[in-house]
Image (cartoon, rainbow, N blue to C red; front, side, top):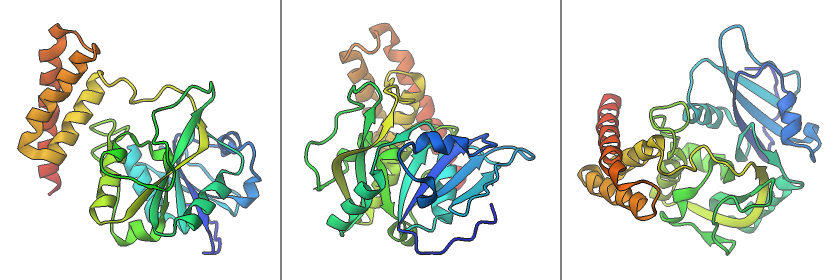
Length: 279
């Protein structure tokens, strides 16, 4: 960690997960409209010994981690954050003008919110995904299914106090490459914290998403593991319904049905073994 001592009066802190960085130049590309000296940033850089990232800026703290996995990186950031409100961030996005004011105003207007989910815009103007239409709306379990990490701003104290973290079996660089946002928000709702949606974009992202191909083996594996997490023995039925959905939507061919189902079955078995080893 850098030797950057800053005061504890930090209203908003941006938690950036990145890999193999040796320079902070990427931050300038993320915040083209902001005065960087007025932002508080925590960077978790997953790297190798001898290739550490160093910050010479008082308002930019750096933690170099020698372990891999996006969820692990998010957890390190949450554990070491100091902001009242924390914004989860990646290194391949560009923040819109006044994003920080939008976030702070939203929490001011919704004081009961522990988490507020915002929108992503794309560089091309093409909708990134289908969002709810109404702001200030409480989010249910159904609404959290397609949440992206970089849409999430949270009250740090509420998350830390309830010992909520990202499941390290899920997320890029782990056993199952997606689903970590859903499981994180599910834990938030489980302890009756309030999650709101704000129909306002704060960030630009390229349209393509790492988890956009719902028929890929990686996505099928992650979905099957989530079913195992949520439904235990009923996971096999939910997996069958999901593969049938892919067939019905013509995302797979009928000759692929058995192979995709077996891919999901293997993932359920792997998840159960990994979860048992963690207990």
